[in-house]
Length: 392
Ligand SMILES: [Zn+2]
Image 1 (cartoon, rainbow, N blue to C red):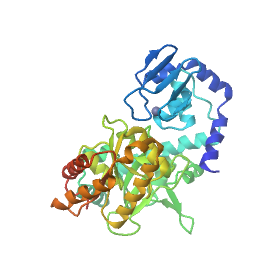
Image 2 (image 1 turned 135 degrees about the horizontal axis):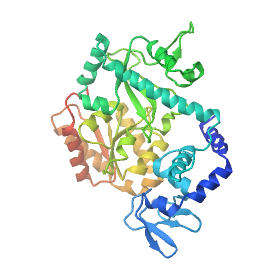
Image 3 (image 1 turned 45 degrees about the horizontal axis):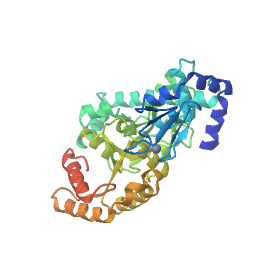
Image 4 (image 1 turned 60 degrees about the vertical axis):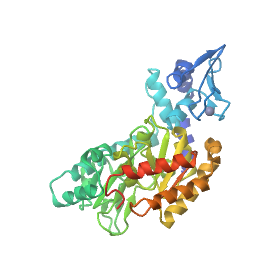
């Protein structure tokens, strides 16, 4: 079953009467008003659109039809659409959120998919706790894992904040741990945490790796990224697609960045770059899950960011990724207007300023939406605030 059809499958599982009752109990003016400052204009309410950047209001809420519409970006719909869009969550989640608001019991998730989804989420949470506990244990391999994070310049606070951990050499340990917690084989198979050897033995996908949990926008752990401590291959192992994890629609650390007062995001190449930036005080650093940025990820970032600095490595792969990402931002409807800045010039002057600084081999930093002078200044700011050892 594809992701899309799975969604509509779920949608149809929520009874029509339930949605009607929910809509009756939800006042869209009050709902939108808790996110947007609204001003009454006759029978309508107007305000600044939360879905695109604007200085004069083109966003309207219509109490009569219980709907909203933005004449600037075309966003529109009912209370559920609004909740979906403003929180970047899917339909069933938006319904649940509104139900809680309206004091209604949750819609009956008697469908198998919904139940499995919540089992996987709770399994991931347990697994993250397990990995974190392993990192803090007294055995030698844990000491090496802690030393690895420290070599990368991370302090204890950051390790806790990002829930970083360690998957032990014993590939069976997590399996046993989750079995003891009562998860059955079908659930363990669906979690994406395990693999089966040719002989049928089940082991943890991530054994002997430092672990980074990946969160969704509501703070659920939906996947993991694991990296080896040395130079062995493969360097990175990431969770496969599961019921709760859709790589192309996930932006790492967006759940933190979206709460920042700053709307200037820094798009990095990998988890490590992002975590280092957060430790350095740049709480809007994010990166794509998976290797290449997708249009869906660009859309997500655009919902929270007014400006995006692309901050990739200066090697050939990094430059290619930069070009590709830039193209995606240019093509995104949300950001059309802001990409008209002279990117080429920005790039040249930025690279030059980087080359002149006597730090490590320079990144290519491209800035969009900014005047070139601004970009140079911001890029060097980021450069100088990095903790030592972050880019090794
Ligand atoms: Zn708009």
